[in-house]
Amino acid sequence: MNAVRMRASGELPLPAEVVAALHADEGDLVRFDIVGDGIVRLVWVPSDGAGFWTEGWQAGERRAEADVAAGRGRLYHSAEDMFADLDG
Image 1: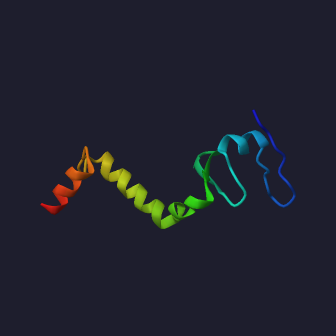
Image 2: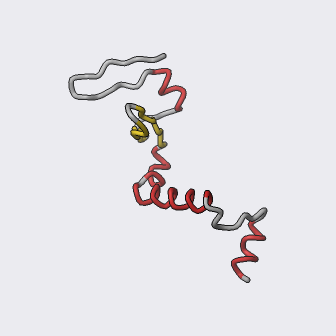
């Protein structure tokens, strides 16, 4: 288990082992999402993928996941099948 002390400024330094496991680099975004009573999920976002982690993008991801869970949509086994269906 890794433990760190909160700084007076409210910052929590990530343990070196966590940084190494995430392959995190300077400029990467690290999000902390509250997912339950006292449960926090850490989400690492590489700096070159930060655009995918905007709230608007994530809202679209949640809608897509809900559609998949509800059975809405089609499964294609190739790009050619998908484009043929879109063209049709």
